[in-house]
Length: 372
Image (cartoon, rainbow, N blue to C red):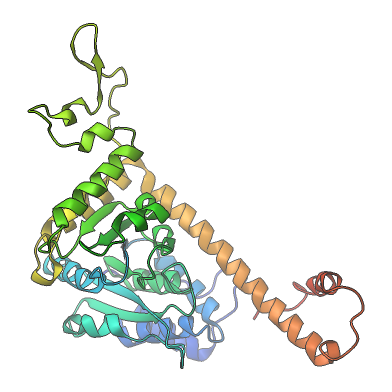
């Protein structure tokens, strides 16, 4: 497992670590999985000093390959995540898994269903599994999922797998947190194309038709390919042969009616072609199709590196995360201002002005208070 150097303090002005957090960081740097688990717990609970801890360990971030697995409930994402992790481990690579579960309505914690389904991997050396509660997030990931993945990355895992909660058509946030996004669908679910209409089509780098031993798998695969072709402007590319004529031969060419033959397109192919999301069939419970899926993930990551897209994607993801950290800090400060105002009699006292005027007045106090 790879290790990096970590600067506990630098010139950025971040707060110094307390002795307790310093010991935790030292254990993290020494490769103690228990220290990693405790770091993630502090981040998930947003305990005192958690952002200082994240800052202290940030130098090791950026080396792991991140793969997101998303799709509707019941598609078999947990099983697929487990067998992909096993395949990567068999290659001698280390894997961290962040499995986002629904929140308990009573405690707010994760229901741990994903962790139970991956129980056979829990004691595997080189694999670390963490269930996180969605805690009301509607993007398929928990609010601190990105930071848990950063910690696994900094800890030295070769791969980080992000499995979304399975909320259906809205779980698109994974695309901004992963290098490669796998959309998992299942035959006879009735929501294959419907889910894609809501945006899954745009975020997929690979499609997986899981439980492909069920009736309807080939039809679903063809539906996805047809929708892809329509979006790409080549509806004939995925059309089946008709009366002995294979219309897919027209893909990437122009039909010249004057000469009665297919002519090469005027636009020559670039040296590195655009990535076209493949549609794969798998039976995750039986381990079928997993080797091809892992190979395609390797190919997609190589394409990202060759085109320069990897750096661009990661920069955009870092910017988005920075924005969310800023919003979290402002919300924290606003909550403190609100609590003070309520405590000073704002709730029971007479309102002086409209809610908008009062809000503007309170907003002026945000930023004047420490954000801890």
